[in-house]
Length: 450
Image (cartoon, rainbow, N blue to C red):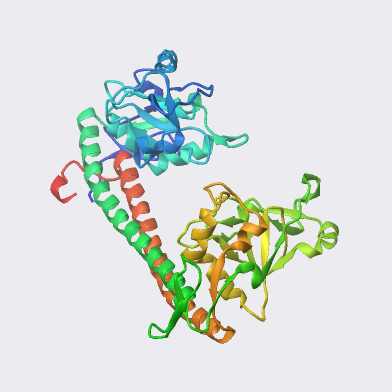
């Protein structure tokens, strides 16, 4: 893409050079009212009423009303509207929490209100709202947000700081041209991202099917079958047994370490947060204990190859289950509400047990328990009460090899699609950033080919 003929220094380090006929100014100079936010009190939520929008509903530049926090009464809405009442083309930015910096624009006339995590930008007569939205999404502005945000219990950035950050501003008609171009160009990128996202979902379903079929039906589709005696399990291969997990394994819960036990270094303890998205993570809020405390709690040791589960919190995605294999070298200790599965190796291999616990059939039983809700609080008996179909150790080895082979190929495809999505997102951000800072000139681009 072509560049503008002449540039000048914006006077802002993180903004760099801008086209000569553009200006750089503080955002507050381009707004019709000072940046504001919603109420700082927690309202009484209702099942119906006026939608109440907070950070979780802000994504991809728009408000997702399917993800609102809840509803408030008309009386509460009238009260909160005295401070701020949403208006078409207002732009929101999350100003606190893990998603600080994410933006959205009001693109409809739905009656709603917002909570305090959202900062409101209302463009003045010399600023196009969609140009403003894209500018706030640019990497330049996002880096400035990161530069100036502060940390308390979570990251946040003040409204006074936001309105004193700089914006690069072309003439109004040029703003509209840039916004129109980015709308078309990013829509095409988003379509590609959506296709890759759907492909990943299909691949995960296939992965789940490979595991579930292999651990309940085996590898030979022509083998004779028999009634398992369990209604939901149906028929299983002749020679297999239908057994509860407590017949083939046991479970060892973690230790309730006190906060006073925690150190800056030493032996890492594995908490619920380290069993994340059905994978073993040691880099998520690592917590350590001293060697002396570790020696006293050696019975709670886990190491590479062990199978662990989280007993509290989200059970994990059904496409992978919630059983996690420790896949990093080292010595760790289990914290409370995380447990180690101990297979009876005369009956079941550790890897086969992990696949049982990732199968749709096992997960269905867990989710059917009273504790098997989104925020689960499972007991050891819950985990061990589920029924599985068990072949001989020799057949288990063949099934594990089969699943490993099939799922590794699927995982490679998932990795490629994930990388493709990351690259597309990078391209989208780079395109937005280049356009709203004048690094590319889109005025003469054919919009049909954008």
